[in-house]
Length: 291
Length: 269
Image 1 (cartoon, rainbow over the protein chains, first blue to last red):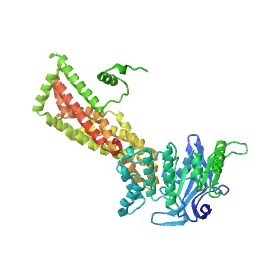
Image 2: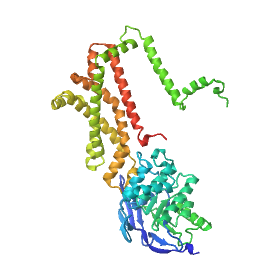
Image 3: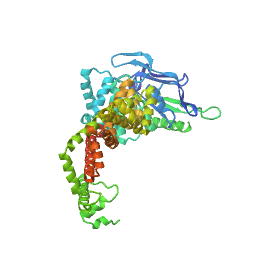
Image 4: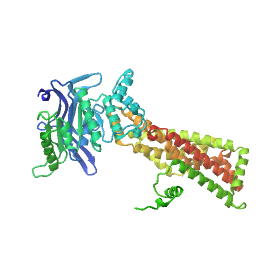
C-alpha cells in the first residue's frame, strides 16, 4: 500500500485571512470572508510519494453558483486584489526557483484557463503559443522546438495554422491550456472546465489533468465544478465554499470555506472511485444544499 | 404528412424554396438569380421608359456616360478616389489614436466627448476652416477628415468597449504588461474591424465627398462634375454620374470586404 502514503515537503498555496468586497450602488458588498483562518486553513502542500516520480496537486473548489468560487479564482490568479489578507505561493520562474520562499501572488504568476477558453481572434494556434512561449521566457532558439513538441503531444499538429473560429470546442480548450503551460505556470486554475463537455471530452480533460500533475512535482491544478462525482474522483483535496449561518440561523454575508476534505489524509486520493468516494460526494452534496 | 413538393417538378421545387423563409440555397443559384434580376431591371429601364420624360432612358444614360468618359471622366474619378483615400487614411489614423487612448483613464472622458461631436453640423465651421486652410484641396481634406473622424471614433470606441473582459484576463494571466495587452488585444487582435469600420462608413463618406468637392470645383472630382451637370438639368449625365459613383462605391465595398475576410477571425471553416 506504499503507493498511497506520502510526505509533506512544503506549502504551495497558502491563503491567510482573505476577504474581498466590492463597492456597489447599495454600498460595500462582501463577496468573500475569512478564507484561510487558523481554525479553517486553506493550504495546499507539495507532497512526495514513494515509487511515484512526480505528484502534482489537484484541488477542487465546489459550492453553489454565486458562492464566490470565481471570485476566489480571480484572487488566486492575481487578477483582483484582496481587500484584506494574502495569498502566498513559492517564488518560481522558468530560470529560477526558490520554492521555500513564499511570496504574495501577482498577476501572471498563476495560469488561468477561463470557462469559455478565450483565445486571440486573429492569430493562428502557432502564433498564440509563440506569444505564450515569449511570456514564459523560453529562449528564442528553443521556442520553435518546444512549441512543436506541445503541438505533437496535445494532438494539435494539424491545427497549427488554424484560428480560433476554425477550432472545435475541445481544440480551443487544449490551446488555452497549452498557452498557460508554456507561460511556465506550475499553478493552473480551471474555472468550470467540465461544464458543457460531452463524455468523450470529459475523459480527454481528465487525461489532461493527469498529464499536468505528473509532469512536475510542484504542478498544481485548482478547478471548480458542479459535478461532485468528478470533484471527488479527480481531486486530492476539496474545499467547499458557501455561506455560514449565525446563531439566529441567518446567513452571514460573504462566501467562505465551510469545509475541506483532504482525500490524501483520508486515504481516498489516487484510488479508483468507490463507495467511500460516493459517501463523501453525498456528504458534500448535503452540505452545499444546506449552505 | 403529405407535402405539395411531392407533386412538383425540380424547377418548381427550386422556385418554391426561393420563396421559403430561411431556406439554404446554393450560392451559384443565388448568383444566377441576381444576374437575371439585374438584366430584368435594365430591360425594364430600356423598354418601359419613354424617350421624352424627365427620367432618362437607358440608351441616353449610356450615351451620356461614353460622352463624359471621352471628356475626361477618368480624371475626375481619380481625383475623387485620391481625395477619398487621403482623407480616409488621415481620419482612420487620427480616430485610432483617439479610440485607443480611451483605454488610458486620463483620456477616457475626452474620447467619449469626441464621439458626441458627430451631432454638430460641419456647415457651421466651414468658413472658419476655409480661412484656416486657405481653401482648395487642404480645405476639402480637412472637412472630410473632421466629418469622418467623429463617425470612425464612435464606431471604433464601440468595438473597443465590447471587448470581453476575459480577453484581457487571459493576457494578464500570461504575465503580459498593460501596454503589451493594449497592443495585442485592442489593436492587433481587432485590426480587421478597422476595415469594417471604413466599409460601414463609406456611404457617409461618399455622401459627403460630393458636397466637399462642390466647394472647390477647380480640384475636379465627381462631386464637382455633378454640380455642374445639375445646373444644366442634363438628366442623362446626372444619372450616368450617379451610377458611376454607385459602381465605385460598390467596388470599394467589395475590395474592403475581400480584405476583411482574409483575416483569420473571419476566415471560413
